[in-house]
Image 1 (cartoon, rainbow, N blue to C red):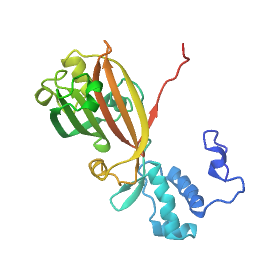
Image 2 (image 1 turned 180 degrees about the vertical axis):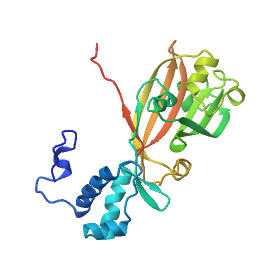
Image 3 (image 1 turned 120 degrees about the horizontal axis):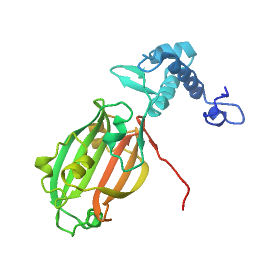
Image 4 (image 1 turned 45 degrees about the vertical axis):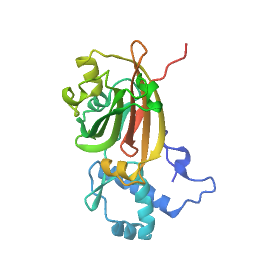
Length: 251
């Protein structure tokens, strides 16, 4: 079951002793079937696959579970279909909107909440205000062609965006709003990426099972003068996103 594909994992995941779990053998066969069906193709039922590969339904279920988590398959109603390619989001100062549009998808956001509250100690330095000064918290579901793919929380001082609740279209790019309407340009940002599981509330908002791995990005941005601008916490579906970055030699 080795592969000649130079981009595949070494030995395609087969241990050196040559013995592989039964579910993994089924997974490899279903993966080949996925390639034959193509995007949007309807996968046979668990029962049909169990008969075809002469294994138990639980073995098939474990194989499908991994393919779902990897983003190769998607649930649609009571069936399972072949998923399209993952969205590639660049690790740059470009906004989510720009990244999705570059791939021919239609970006969107659905507002969950927009509230103003006194800034706590832990947030003050990151948004450039003193403790107790008013800050905005805006929470939005990220969409790609109307599919829910993530959840974004943005914190910014009221002084930076005093009319955020009346002048900003929550379905649009916040970066474009800051630049085009308020004359604020981004000068740099620090990001940290980790894998997490969504909370029950987050999973409900994104429309995923709680066990689905998520990619979590923490970003603290500054303007061109180096002053703190915003803090953003974004959850991306691990089965629908990958991240890219251009690396160059250090000075």
